[in-house]
Image 1: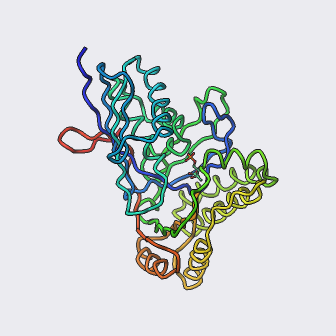
Image 2: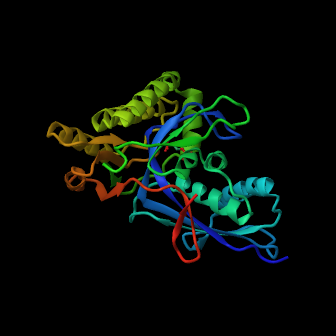
Image 3: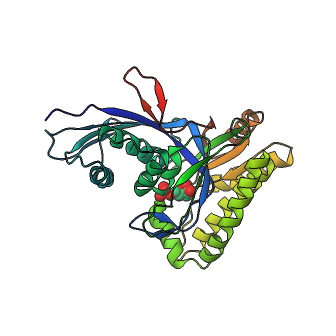
Length: 338
Ligand code: PMV
């Protein structure tokens, strides 16, 4: 049997403005509530998949090195889902690299599993529509369901036990081209962060604030969608900052506590408030780590980045604009939308 042709796909990372934090089903990775995100063009994962009958096991290279055992197992388990869906029973060679700003400190599971879902299904001869691709990517990582799409995306929690209604969809907005995300990396001897998977489960199980968090999310989603429809960056920013703080509050109240913040995280948050007081568009969001990402406008991005570079403990600052949907890379190197 001949080796099936290799397929290469690219997908952008995304940052949630209304966070996903908690599952309704762990096995199928079903979120307990919806979420809303922005894809980032500066943070891309490129992944090549080739099914090869000569291989006894999946061979997985991440950023030029054989993947560590835990990452390799996660990718292989995901490829098993693709094998079940495509009927291709042979093992695959997967090569994946992240084109992220130097030391961005950002997780690549969203872009990684979106690119893998697209490349692996195409390599297995399956042309999935974006919604099906989003459902599949979700099995790798909840946030990956959103990285199938460009710009703003809304993830639906769904109700079905099967997960067939838990997918993301793109949301068009005049803000897509107007917004920027300034990424301030908080570095310096940071202990390994508590992974989002186990931290959200731990929050759901032990935090007295988790119920309040789940009640808040639908309200924030509705308000964020209204802000996108109205092109109201100030309203969107206020929701994003409040939502991120509420997510962290629920994690901080877990027992034992999950605290991602470093002193420089708080200093960066204070700088964001000072920028706002000085009339700049600037609203902060934070994920399962100490870094601060600031939603701003194209006009204010430079000033926001300069101010954050001046915060002690911030080691790297970059600016990202909205990114495109996951896409297949042709042999010639040109991009095609999924
Ligand atoms: O999809 P995961 O398991 O990487 O979880 C993402 C969790 C957050 O980044 C904190 C929030 C989000 O919605 O992306």
